[in-house]
Image 1 (cartoon, rainbow, N blue to C red):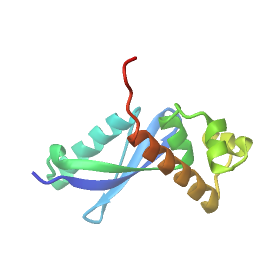
Image 2: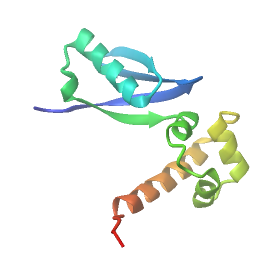
Image 3: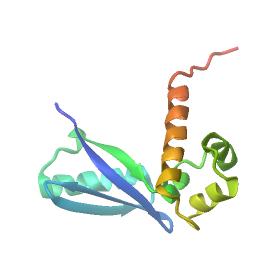
Length: 128
């Protein structure tokens, strides 16, 4: 069974995640209170309109800054600001949606997150 991986753009509006993607030149949009719920709703649409088996569909997630920080609230903004060399107040403004980062700031945030992900992938816990 082959898995089809689609690019899912996720935004946050009020208490709802909104996701959009394009498949066979057809734009699909759905909303849900959680990202797993959003994926489920989009898989239903893909089944209804494109006859794609939901078990064969996976998603790459693309977030705007506000949605990312809502989905990953585990991050301390001050610590992420240190990793990116961005002002902590600017980072807070991005996370709250008060300001939008520039393309250069987005690149710095992405780079810091990718480096952190690499470190996390190499991490194991042991019982002491």
